[in-house]
Length: 432
Ligand SMILES: Cc1ncc(COP(=O)(O)O)c(C=O)c1O
Image (tube, rainbow, N blue to C red; front, side, top):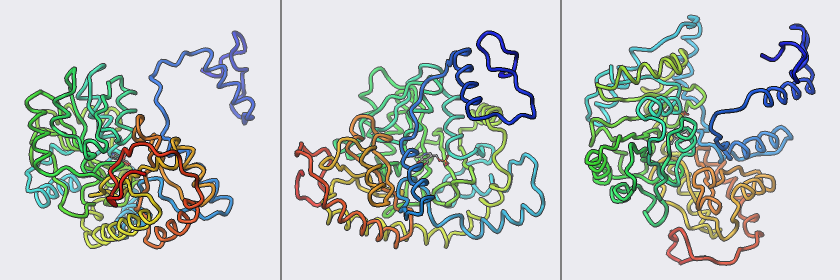
């Protein structure tokens, strides 16, 4: 397309062995964008990735960065998983693989952890939860269908739905709703929804639904013909009761999960879907046509990660210690309006007394202290301008280091005019 002659404003012809200069590339792009209209839906970036880029630049310049922006465990892949991948690599695993062993292991996981019987043919391996979500959104809904998502919530729900011309309908899950999606809020949506995505523990808040709340939501979905999708990517990381799977209360639920969080394997790009029997072939056709099979090495590694339960438990214990350290440290610095972190590894904090531009705030905080955080606008277009998310999936000394850096910096920040509190004050001290 790019090298077809020199007429009509097209880019000039280039021989195949010539390395294009930056200016040639720029003019190629200009020509391409003039010649071919872009027809896809505009989706915003992950604003956190702007912070990530800044963090990478700072690191390259020799600065210390405490990485609390992305939800990615800094402990790295469990050793048993890495060893399994190394063994598989020695066998040159270049084929497309859908590991029957891994699928059966996942099925056993549902029996052991949740007491739920899931036939292996209902489990589909995917390139992370991201691909699972895209396949489910594409296969189960049509253009213009309305899918409920919690606000604040994981930004890719909203943006992937938009990219596929499905309508994301935001339902307030802020402080007024105790950060949880309720059956009542679902019932109140008008016009009615075709589907809803829930996440417990949730990103960015860590809030969890108990069994009764989940059952009430599932009942509401059943009564109204709303397809229930449950993103269970943070299951296994909770600090009180274990998370309840949607499959425990609704056998027809679509479940999305991944090896990125509990299993500490985000870069291995591996996740899974559990779907009802009647939808298994349909979903499988979507997964294969869109993504073929997930990485072969990752499937070997994941099988080993499943059984390294002592290692996984140690991670969760570290997150618990980190969470408590961070909650206490932030409270001492006047940051007390924080969603209840029942699970996952995030604190979502209202810093409205310091900023109404969370992206600029995160960028300045990073530049001046080296602490990288995620801006609330990624998760909540309405109230996120006054919120930030801090990931505590890092080491405990790193959390201590972050607090030591944040303390003096926060003390020197000007306070904005007080407004009515939008988050409850965890210290009971009232609005600030
Ligand atoms: C709630 C939620 N769902 C899905 C994903 C995507 O995860 P994956 O790395 O498995 O694609 C993330 C990643 O942060 C997430 O937080």
